[in-house]
Amino acid sequence: MVSEQCTGRADTLSALAILQAFLAGEDDPVPAGFRTAAQWSEEWGKSRVHAGRLLRRGVALGVVDVVRLKVTNGQVTRATPHYAIKGAP
Image 1 (spheres, one colour):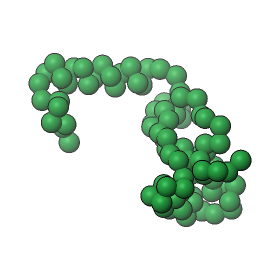
Image 2 (image 1 turned 135 degrees about the vertical axis):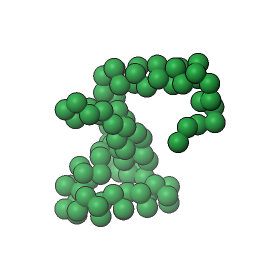
Image 3 (image 1 turned 180 degrees about the horizontal axis):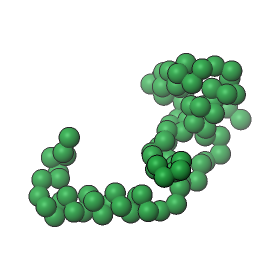
Image 4 (image 1 turned 30 degrees about the horizontal axis):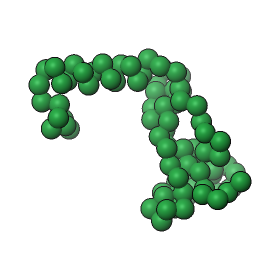
């Protein structure tokens, strides 16, 4: 889907430049207390799917913070959600 803001060639070229800059840089540092859903699932002894559902529900209720951090795994770079439980040590 093309954004309404990205209608002209100049706009698409600037969007491409932003994307290339994002992919070329280093991974984002993970803030203290933030973990991926997979890491939480290991810690809790729950399946990855179940942990993800619990975390997303916590985000909706406002008890879990989420940030999307750039993570490279092999040759694939993704904006991976990392979660932190509010008030947890």
